[in-house]
Image 1 (cartoon, rainbow, N blue to C red):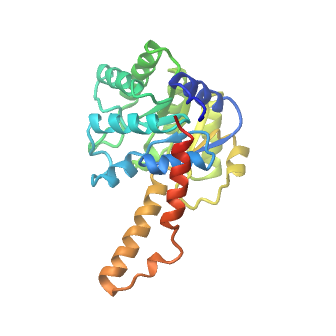
Image 2 (image 1 turned 120 degrees about the vertical axis):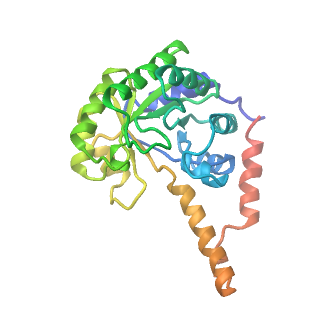
Image 3 (image 1 turned 90 degrees about the vertical axis):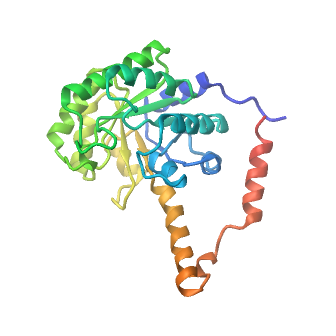
Length: 282
């Protein structure tokens, strides 16, 4: 008989414990199959990817509705037994009141953590102004506390991927977000040891998430040595899958060749994994 599955509260406690010491990788699935396979590989937590999920449904990143992403979070959280962090983009709201209401909806999906960006979606402005960004962080923190406070809150500063790679302004925001109650800090786009270590120092004693989505040359051990607590990969795994698909399909279309099918994992192997996975769940 399969063991009982962990409750949402169990997963939230486990996620919070992961942020207290050490360093862990939190890979980003884009659907139930990829989530369950990553869980089967032994990863202790997962995180959604807005770009990976959007592209799988034929949308550009940032074009999905609040209802679509909330349904996605619920689906992944229900399908897996490890904590799930929600890439909640800019919170799908402009005002602090809208942020608080939407964060409350996000918590109700069963996620163990969520992140809020300081960059507006689909806007020519790369970042919210400092005061506005801080007010949004405070609103998210208040909504989480009102819901029980057990969801891990990650505040993101997006300057290095939004055309504003200013480390001084990033550190200013990090310190303010930590003071406002962020449990974890995420500054995607930083790439150098100097910037990583500066981010860790500015966020201390709170955890830092590093986006390892390119060939930066850093291993898990390297990043742990710099003080990074959490390592995510963003949409990179989903792009690996899409890249292989596009490359192979393009070769079939342009050259009439099927070389991309060489050395594929077999249907039987995938069937075996997912059959065993289902047997182990009530």
